[in-house]
Image: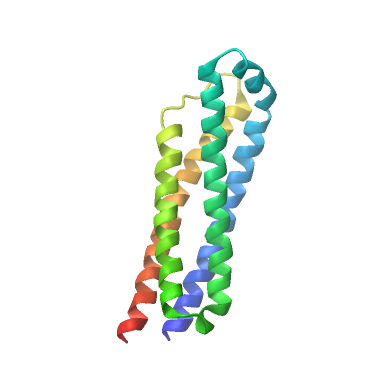
Length: 156
């Protein structure tokens, strides 16, 4: 019974990760439209250079966390029963904490970004990133739930 619940939770995590990955792709694609202009500005301004670096870092960090969640949720849905319970708990807790930290990292940079009139792709990237931030929180919560389920197996 607990195994079927875990498989269901991990399958839902994989779906949520895929959904979040879609928004990450859209945000990164929209930001890349302004990459050349931003790189040119970064040659003359340390502020622009710093903003470009932070933009790349936060988007990349979110992408890596989402991909890790997707890969581990698929692996746990199919192979969990053959793994050490300590490894399963570690993966669940690790993903919950990683996604929570990633959400904070991305949010701290993007929360103050104002939308710019007549710059549609950039504004869409901001909106997409706001959606990603919310979804990272949901993903972290789902991994916290699966952590509880994994720990439950120790006591049952």
